[in-house]
Image 1 (cartoon, one colour):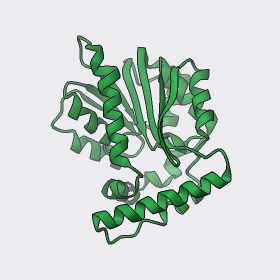
Image 2 (image 1 turned 90 degrees about the vertical axis):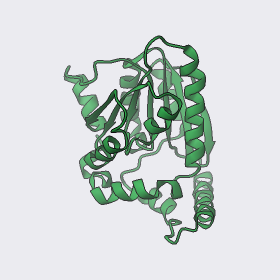
Image 3 (image 1 turned 120 degrees about the vertical axis):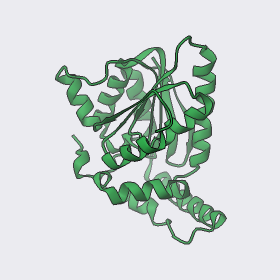
Image 4 (image 1 turned 30 degrees about the vertical axis):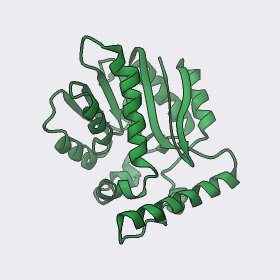
Length: 247
């Protein structure tokens, strides 16, 4: 098992740097959010449920995904999970004016272990499970276990949507995708007139032992293997992708 406690995300400084600079170096972050909200509108709000939509935000960080969905639906009920106490503290602060928010300080590993032990902390079933830039820290077999866990906690016709980095099918593409990412960062920094240079990040990402990206097709196959339907990649730009499926 990958151990969250030994990763950089357990450090307060790293968590705060991400919160402060994510818009600068996460490729097309605002577009990713727009696609998430379009998905929510089309597949969830159009169902016209007679109760609030229930959302599970895994690896919630500072609550950015849930905050975006609240712009579309301020009645939703969300459970936000993160292994970083600093990130969860930020999420609580950002969402303090919204009711029906539940916060859980646990790692993915702890969730999976609790299910095996019969002490699962999640008793609800959800209409939508979302995650952003978190699941790539797991090895493929761990991802499969998490996908199975997510499937078991979705309502019938519920959806899973993951915004994350993926591994290119061949090394040449992987190398170009990092160049593409660096070019985007350079352009974004220029447009935003940012003095700090983040062009080193694609190479740092490649060399970071906490990152375990897998090929997109392998992850789509993993979703299908646990029972997900309508599995597809909804968006891709270099290594950044949005993919998911329906129970």
